[in-house]
Length: 165
Image (cartoon, rainbow, N blue to C red; front, side, top):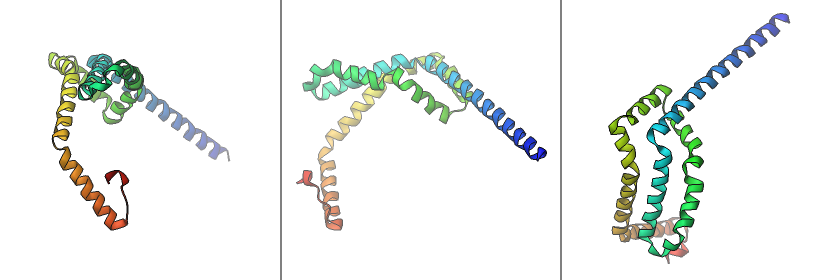
């Protein structure tokens, strides 16, 4: 009986030490990730991206211009840096080792890395505009494809799509 208690106690101690080691690694990764975010200037990048996204929406639908500030406030609340930082940290920690995060940080501290950070919101916004423009240029094709699929589904399983007429 004494032997099994000793074995159980040893096992519990080993688990505790393993947990502490994992916790220390997690803390190290989190600290490295926060340093990376600083090097990437993500607080500013997020703000610029939000502003550009809202402005793109307004250019596409000028009638929503009076609501720009409301949209910005909403986006900052739910997609702003302080709101997103913990989730973004988890994404990086789950996908990169601590060493890789430190390598990324080193890159973003170089002139090219800083240029990348500076241009990323603009490139993202312009890429979104290009994508939306392509969809708009080909919207008739999309509508036709949807109508054909709706017809196929209706024939196959009797599913009706009232909005498609």
